[in-house]
Length: 433
Image (cartoon, rainbow, N blue to C red; front, side, top):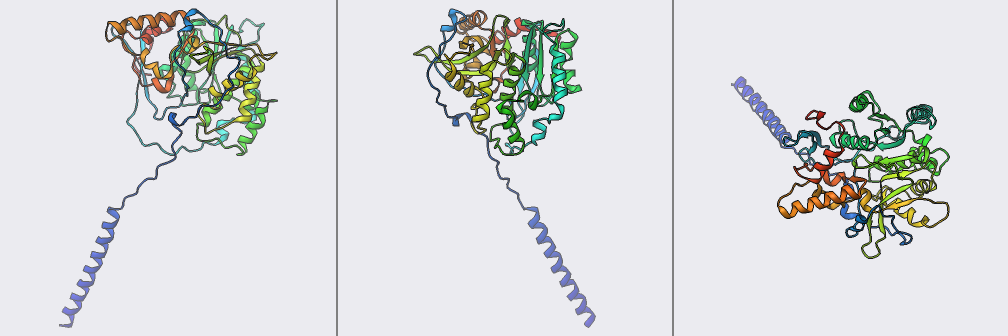
């Protein structure tokens, strides 16, 4: 009897232990972890218009077509997309000589908190100064050498090689179509690699002069006020803010390149239509005031300046003294607008402000109209008139990448006509890069 009682007691204890384990395991199965959303970056709707003194804002007209400007707007630009698109080129079946590009975005994913990249990776150390200087001088050549570039172009690229896609490549194509004897340096750490040069190899095989070189900020800004700013940034004494530090450094980098070497800076979403051969010390207006017909906002997506031009130094000085990493555009379009407004009319500054038609013939919120084909006879007439206006009065077209990167080029659209006129390789690309 005692043995039976002991066995039952042991079974009861074992059953209780098993029930305890089952209850514990059940609690872990239904445990849910709720993610905490990260801080979001400023959106366009939160931008504040900066005050700029309204003086000396007259434009130099390229043609009478520049008078057809639209109402005043304020613009911002984002070069780094929220979700990296799959970029590929497509060949129009109805026009085999045309190469188009489309951007198919990935499925939406919640934005993650942006990790702060080590500044050492963003700003290469001064140990590379001699290498950078030597590579730049060797590629650009001296003015007296036979290898000298007639036109010096500069672009910056702060993203990965994979995101340097069809749109960026076509911007390079259009540059060389209008300037076959020009040279292009893409300042980029990612593109300055064997894979990056492989992307650029089709241009090299055609005898076009293009290269990618990692930037050296210490060399470019030596003996300027920005040198101390960069040093403080490296030491962690400057708050980079919520806006992409890479984009703000791109705003500074383009100024240093033009100040140190002189030449032409272009964003990678600018399609070149005509030669810039007659331009010197030029910046473009993005918008004009409807009533006064004077410029109301400049942009820094296209700039053409001589080496060590005093206006460039003022731009660099303004960047270092007024840097704000939390206001989109503060260190870019708003910066050049502030400075030009202050120095216009002063002795020693010789530059020209071109009307919006020169580089920005379509506002950022209307860029989609250039990608659409005709829907009816009325729209067909408008497209033809707008195309003629751009072809006669514009030197380039800024595509406003943030607003247009996912748009497809429709048959009969203005962009289709522009691409057909400005391509170098045209139908030689594969269907996907």
